[in-house]
Each structure stands twice: as C-alpha cells, then as structure tokens.
Length: 432
Image (cartoon, rainbow, N blue to C red; front, side, top):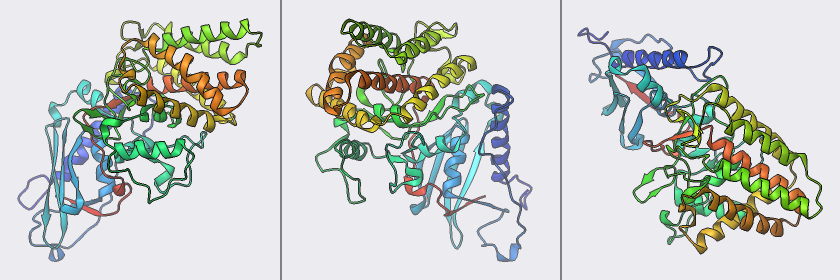
C-alpha cells in the first residue's frame, strides 16, 4: 500500500501475472510447467533516500524483463523507447504507461481491468511461455540445435535477426551465396520491404519447435513489424509459403499438406518407373501425413487443426504433428548436405520471386506444390550435385518438416517486436 492507502501498481501487476498463470493451469495439461515464472524479491529501503517525486514504494525490474512480462500478459508494445523514457503497452484489458522521474529514471505504471478478462479471452491472447519463444519478441529467430545452419554469429544464442525485414532479406541472400555475415553488412539503399521475401521458408525449415509438450498453446510472437503493404509475419497463408513471408492467423498454414502428399505419391511413382529402389523415407512421410490428415480433430474445411487459432487445438493431434516434426528434424540432423540443400532451395525461391513476384499469391495449393516438386526440386538437385535419389528424399523431409512446423504455431498478428539490443538488457525500469 502507498501512504495514501492506494495499491501500488506493481501489486496489481503481480496479481495479473498470477491470473495469467492460473489461465495456463486451467487450459493446459497438469504436467505443463512454464520455464519462466514471475517472482518477487523484497528489499527494504528508507524513505529518506527516495526522490521526493516518489510517493509510493516502488519495485524495480529491467528493460529486458519488462519486455517479456508484457508478452506473458498477452499485451503488445505501442512504444518501447527506453532511451527516450517512453514505454507504452496495451492489450488484454491492461495498460502500461511511463514517465521520467528526475534523479530516478523511467517509472512505469500498470493498470488493468483483469476481472473483466474471461479465461476464454485470455487463453486466446497468451503465447508460448518459453525462453526460446520470448526471443521472437526481440526480432530474433532462435536456431535449432540439431540444425547448425548458422553459428558463431553476433546475436544472442546464435539467433538470426529478422526485426528489420529488408535487412533480413539481404542477409538471407548473403547466406545463400555462402558469404560470411559480418557486422558491416547492411542492406543497400534501394532495397525496400516490398521486395521481400523468402523469410518464411527459412524460419520454418531451421527454427526449433516452440510449441511446448503437454500444452495446447500454439500462439507465438511475430518477430517483425507490419508496415502497411508489407506484413512480413502477418500474411495470408493459402499455401506453405504464400507471399514468402513469415506467419499469420491463418487457417491454412498447412492447407497444402494434402497437395504435398499427392505430389509425393507422384514422385514415388516416377522413381519406381525409372528403376530406383524406393527409400523407406517416402513411406514414413506418407504414413505421417495420413495420421495427421485422417485425425478426427483435423479440420477438413480449413485444412488445419480445429480451434488452433485460439490455443484450443487437440493436444493429441498437436503431439502427433510435434512427433512428426521431431522425426524430420532428427533425420535432417544426420543429413550431410542439409545446408547445401537449404541454400539451393532458398536461392531457387529467390529466383522464382524475381521472375514473378506474385507467384506465391495463388490460392491453389496444388499449383504451389507442383511448382515446388517440378521446378524447385530438379534445380536443387542440379545445384547440389548429390545423388538424385538421396537428394529427393532429404528434400522431401525438409519440406515436410516446414509444413509440420507451421501447423504447430500461430503468429500473434497485433505485435511489434522491440529492438534486439534490449534482449537481456539490465537497464533498470521502476514500477510505481
């Protein structure tokens, strides 16, 4: 309590965080344990040493932690400029505002009508509560430890920066051309967001699964901002990679799974007709596709797990997709040409985009998959110079992994990441 018997706002903040934790417990398997939990450490201070502007006992956190707290509450940053003393976040019937207190620093105030937030609404707003998923909120995509596509980079945990969409596109070009990325690399002046991007394919193929076991929570943060025409992580996924950009509230991040299966059957038939010995990999992938597509909680109309957009999909179906994605990841981890395949595939997608910027806008999944199997795969095989049979099997597993990855995640569309420099920032932020 303050000296005038009003609750301090950090007390309400803790209450709201606890309410959010209870929502997790109500809608998630009892075995589920978030790897980050709110905690408080009490410290006694004398009022004699507090600035005169402070009339209530305050709490202190850091810029890095408050950014993650906002994620946990299902809120979004409207302004996050600690250097200018400006912090403002809204969402889920909560509000954070800031002021600069002389001789102290940034002091934020938290308010909420949390008693008006229903469990249903809160469940739809919460995101995967894991450390790796939190990195997305700083414009960084974590890497999968089994797929060493990028390492020894300048970013935390070898994450790939996507917060600046045009720069991401440029860096991805450099990566595909086997150029070493250096701090001096920056996007050329003529590069604009409208020219993007093959980013979504890259993320789906190399990012770790962020959905946590024993959980129906599939919503994750969008690690790049939405700028009008360009919505790097908020596009309509009518196919695997519509618009070649990352993420969406879509019903169709896997609508082309059935088309993928049809193309794989055709590929298998063509290999048999040319006397190739059929690898068990195709049979395994087809079986896993059938297990997903024939599941009673698979929505045949939307071609996605039922109720996935509000963190309400069947946990059993999500586990099946999760197992399939892990299987593909394990197999790719032993694929000696994985990085060569990845580079070749992305380069060919860049070429397709340059030829026809609108090719990925088609709403017909069969068209997209035919394009991938009949145009991209042969070019990838030509570029990588490996066995045609071996290349085809590894390429199929790589695409299947991407399809599974997007069926385990839904990007939060009204979210803009904060600058990556504030990840794990220790700059003090006071809470009034």
